Length: 114
Image (tube, rainbow, N blue to C red; front, side, top):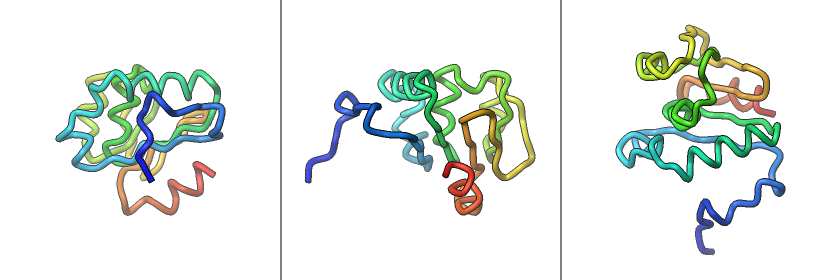
């Protein structure tokens, strides 16, 4: 099976999207990638549920979608620089955006996304 490119994603086929973070988000600078940012903007504009865990929410932050919203992560300084509000909760939810701080919060994060 071939991998689907971001430009091939049809948002109408999905009711939610999750940006899963890890060191790859940082090393590959996916948070600076316009295609990822546009995907985040589009899914949020469509009013669908968006989840991001660990460094995945750097994509949402750089897309301008966490400004003024509570977010949690081990890398909170970066998100605060972009305008997110720091939270000490393991999982935060603002409307249809769910943020998890890391893999230890996976179950709680998944339950909120669902």
